[in-house]
Image 1 (cartoon, rainbow, N blue to C red):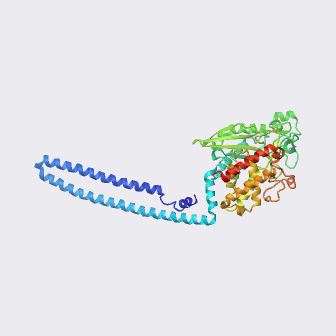
Image 2 (image 1 turned 90 degrees about the vertical axis):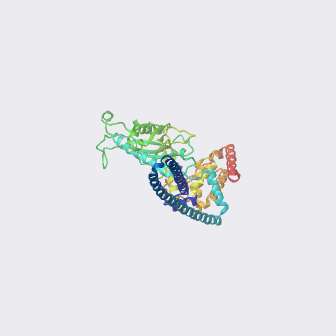
Length: 497
């Protein structure tokens, strides 16, 4: 593949081999057509000449004149035929020598590259090629489609700002790309990739958000509720003259002269309701779709979802694009958010928001991309391991956590593409040890190797680590089954060819 790409890039201005072959075939066909034409013309001309000689002996003088002209014409045409055939043969000969030179250069380049690769590590390079073909390691071109999704949501948010400027719905902040597709990899086929975008929510005028621990405590990860409080807008350094204060105006006056507050639209009691927000945004997307430029290129369908907004975009060509918009509230100034979308296996109350580390994870992978050597294999390692563990029931999030740990333990210089199989082996071995010990520590809790670019709440430092394999520790049967499946997949990795 490397050889082919370098060949294409170095000869962009020349004909390809297929085009040269087609040109040669065309010239041969043209030569045959010319030869056939002159043969037919000659035969017909001779027949006509014999007929005229037999029937018009009286006009011998005229016939001799015509014959002389035909002789001259035939001589000229013979010369044209000779020179056209000679020119065609010269072109064919030149194309042959050019093509032969190109083939020799390609062979020399291939020999030199193969010698270099064999000097580096021939078995590993061959195995990398085998795995690339077997597991289709080519990372999908996610960046361009991710930009399409971000532009679409940015246009929708611009429409929402003008539409809801006089209302008291949550303020929709610029989208943040999260999830594996926005990190630059995906365990799925390109047509099945879902582009997930966080839409941070800010309180509207006259409102404030307060994060409170969820009293139910049913979820394994931290869960909270978002209490909405009305605040005074008629006092302070910059009082808002364009609205009535929810605290200091009568309820009758507010109903008559002002739209309802957030407490009366998208809340259950005093707490922000994720299901109501999702339904509100879905309704807005349907009504505002015709106002965005993307509506001229895509047809859009809102898919069923109770805590997020899922869209399917289809081009005229039939190619589809899946987008999921998740609503979130930032914890202070950190990279940790509360998410409206719970895990698929669990559905807490609609006023329960779960702590999400997706923004911090995306930021971590951007940090690695800037620090790692060119053509780093960490994303390809993730994709390969995800394909290896496909069907085993093993969590993709646990795999990503393990790779993030290894990216801080193994120097980034050791993540070059030639070390791919070594890093895959390290990842599988690391996961196997974690499974045996029934312990995989969450990446963002009490991690001394955390990059400084990532902002975490102060409570994360020195906090009790969250064990992602705690459920296996509590269920010996599930642990034994998971370990057996993992061993089977690992055996398939090493000996399944």
